[in-house]
Structures are given as structure tokens and as C-alpha cells.
Length: 126
Length: 145
Image (cartoon, helix red, strand yellow):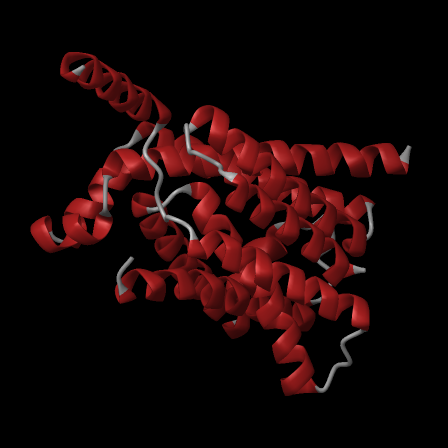
């Protein structure tokens, strides 16, 4: 039962952080290059524009859910399982989600990067 | 990709690593927070380590948002994972923690993975635009032939 709770928490972390990352990336693409915007209109305009993007707030909320799921996951399972399992699977899930929802062209180069990084994270925690 | 943009990516790696380490250091002072008295959660920010850690995480979030405004998610994410490598190096050279061969292999894999992503384009056009371009290319070809 403990295992089931731990894996449920891991699944929730992955789903929530994937949702958060996609929403935040989508929002920032709509805001546009903040460096250029800052130069043209000042920092306050950048902050207002970011906060004024509705999907940004949703993304931050999803990140909050991911953070609390991590805390709950850590209270049920071991640090050495929860952190690498959720981090590495999030990399792969994000690559899939970025391709589907953000229409990023995830070429062979980025697939290799995602898989290598995910594998590396698992080994580092081993 | 300009030098300033690489600085922002470096900021993501450094601030997230520093922030996490400072939070961990601060929480060691505080110890376990009893679940029946959550008011302790509000007071943790008074710990200087935790306060510094939160500042670093805010800096990380700003860099992360800035990077996402001009680069793909699948380009930025591998950069965040360099933090794992940084922590291992700090532990090894700063605190003389041993690094097992398995962890060295993991470090190599992450470094090579990040290199793979970083060597490619930082932003790819959305597919609908590409299809439109491909379509118009075909049309021009037809006209020409």
C-alpha cells in the first residue's frame, strides 16, 4: 500500500510539473522575448505582462501542486527513489508534451538529450 | 544565441542549485516540523539560510521565465539538469565527498545530453507555420515549372 501511495505521488508530480512547464512555456512564448521588451518598455511592463497572462497563473498553480506532491511523496517513499524517478520521467514526459501541445520540433538530437539526461539522473541517484 | 542568453541559462543552473542547497542547509537547523503544528512553516523564512535560498529560487524562476520567452522548453530543460552535476562537483571538490563510478557515468551522460541539446537550435518554428511554408514552397515550385 505504501508503494502504491509512493508511485501515485510520483505520477502526480510528473503530471503536475509537465502541465506547469507546458503552461509556463506557452505563456512566455505569448509574452515574447523579455529582453527586448525590457529594453523597450521597462521592467514593470514585463512583470505586468507576464502576470497578466492567464495561463501563467495556471502554470504557477500546477508547479505548486507538483511541489506539494513532492513533499507528500517524500513523506511516504525514499528520497533516493522519489526524486530521481520523478525528475527523469518528467524529462521524457516534457519532451512528449512539448511536441504535442507546444508544437516544438523535438528532433533526434533532443530525444537523445532527453533520454541521456533522464538516464544520467537515475545513475547519479543510484 | 548571444552571450547574454548563455548567461541566463547559466543563471538557471547556478541559482536553482544554490537555492536548493541553501534551503537544505536551513532546514537542517530547523529540524522536523511537527505535522500537528504547521505554524512552524511560516516561521522558517526567518532562518537566514532559508531566506537566502528563497531569494536564489526567485532569481532562478526569473531566469527560467526569461529563457522560456526566447527558447523551446525542450532546449531549456536539459540546462536545468546541469545542476545535478554542479552539486556533485561541489560535494567532491568542496567537501571531499567520494563519487562512485556509477555517479561519474551519470555525470557524463547528463553532460553529453546537455551538449546534444545545446548544439542544436534554441528555438524551432511551430509546426503549423512550417507546414504553411512547405505548402507555399510547393506552390511556388508548381508556378515555376
